[in-house]
Length: 178
Ligand SMILES: Cc1cc2nc3c(=O)[nH]c(=O)nc-3n(C[C@H](O)[C@H](O)[C@H](O)COP(=O)(O)O)c2cc1C
Image (cartoon, rainbow, N blue to C red; front, side):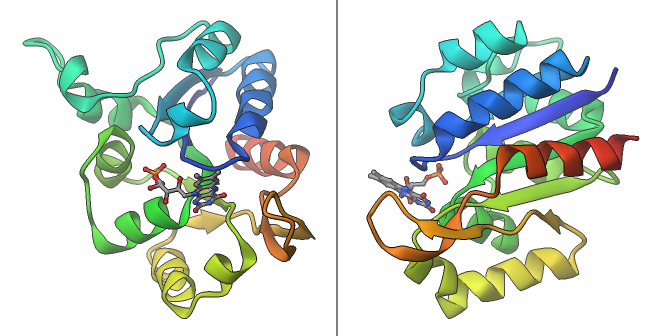
């Protein structure tokens, strides 16, 4: 049994992360979900709480008690971190060292454990040279990526930017944990 930290950001593809949380939990892992504020516009924390049987973390300042600084304890106990879907915003924040919410702060505090980024965004956003530069910064820093696929996107554009298949994401995570 491993501790998997699953970050969910503000994308239409957030509904697919419920399947990722479900499969990882059914595979026997303890799955801990952190949602950004934008992610909660797309899917409710209750879905993840019900699937994982664990508390879902959303607000950094609600979580810290006198006995536990939660963003540090979550970072320390994670065996692996997965961000799926990963927005352009979280990729930019991680590439810049910005830690202004629970997810970006926990990920910035993770040390020596794999962090898997699964981008999902409109293809023009994904091909934006600044986003590509940020992805390269993260790759150079050792972050791992499950690349997005080409598909008809929610905005009806056809191009690269759709979240990778959930099975590909889960297989990659399991291969790293094995
Ligand atoms: C309907 C809708 C769909 C969106 N889909 C995406 C997306 O797939 N990828 C993305 O990077 N941003 C998307 N956005 C924009 C993000 O939600 C926005 O940049 C937000 O600030 C991201 O915050 P977060 O990274 O803290 O979750 C979408 C916004 C809306 C309104």
